[in-house]
Length: 493
Ligand SMILES: Cc1cc2nc3c(=O)[nH]c(=O)nc-3n(C[C@H](O)[C@H](O)[C@H](O)COP(=O)(O)OP(=O)(O)OC[C@H]3O[C@@H](n4cnc5c(N)ncnc54)[C@H](O)[C@@H]3O)c2cc1C
Image (cartoon, rainbow, N blue to C red):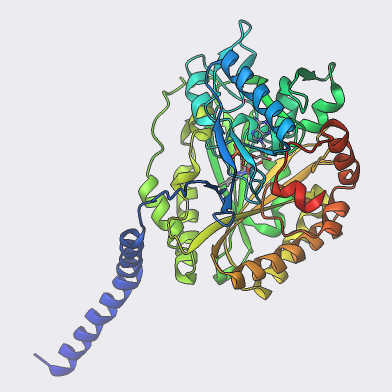
């Protein structure tokens, strides 16, 4: 054979091999490595200590009390505990699933009241309201409601949270055109600082109603809640890859449809084209489709591996964005029940590396300033040594119910997830970045979300929440001995 020909066919083969390696070999090898390195989660609980989802708040406590499951027993237990704390000058911090990240469920040497055991639930005869113990998790509630073709009206994007924790931060989700969860709370029962049970609603104990919703456990123990529920429906998914600068224009165009049931957006964070693109996902109601039974979440291993591969790794971030855009084209037209969409736990994507932790931020930006905020983030983020993994965007309508509100008008929540080393240097970088982003949010008349790290200065807290001073004065009025305590209160009171 002609040696020149042999040489050139050898080069072609090598070239093809390199192309094949780049297209398939490298991503496959990378994902296999990520999968193998990904550890199983070993939950280490130190006796006499508590912590929260930040994994940065390990604190020695006096004791932990688990609420009873039985209603009468739980009432007697909690009342007794409050009276005991009052008599002995002890402090109580109240815990749901402890997914807050700033010690909101923790007080040094205090008593942790763990409400998770208190989780009865009952749908009323009109099928419109669910009465539920505040310790119940959405992962308990969704399968229960599913049996009655019902669903949660407003909740977070995952099912791992308790009802008490959710209404105490006044959570929101990806239900568009909806205020936060407080708008779905008909009433609740509270055990106050005198150990008395109070009914709170829009007509009874109205001030306490608005203080306790979004009140971070500072006014008493929420015993049980009457929540509005909605019908479970089938939705058809559509995903659109758009320019991030067009987010609001596209959002308005796409959700101008009475059949839209859920919407969320995701902005790209890969360094290749940082924050230039977004994927907008809409879910339209299909009234003719038969409701499918609840199933285990699908493809969790591969989704987790692609996601975790993007931590501390630019190649992984670029690969993930490509995979997400490919996924967007594949998901179009697929059908999911509302309950299926809501029933995913945070554990699917959770950090399992003991040297690192996942930290969330959220900023609420008025609709007409969303573009400005995106432009600011493009400039701010590269200035800090922080590992941004994800930005999702959700719509929240004006909150008419709570005292310490974050949605003073229609806003868009920017949920930012970071991978953070458990070192003081990483904590300092994160604190500096958080304060800078909060300043940007404030400059656009926005706010930041309170359940996360306590990095905001007091001045930023007061500028974001002008009602904060009065909120803390009212806390002292309703709880003069300051029995209900946590690190959030200690920092900002
Ligand atoms: C991975 C992840 C995803 C998230 N996604 C979203 C989201 O999509 N939307 C959103 O809005 N938020 C989101 N959050 C924030 C989340 O909603 C809050 O952290 C919420 O408080 C979690 O509920 P929990 O049961 O863990 O509450 P906890 O952390 O246990 O408690 C939060 C606060 O509620 C108080 N509390 C709890 N139970 C009671 C009770 N029975 N009586 C009185 N006070 C009580 C506590 O004292 C504390 O101050 C997310 C958080 C994480 C970690």
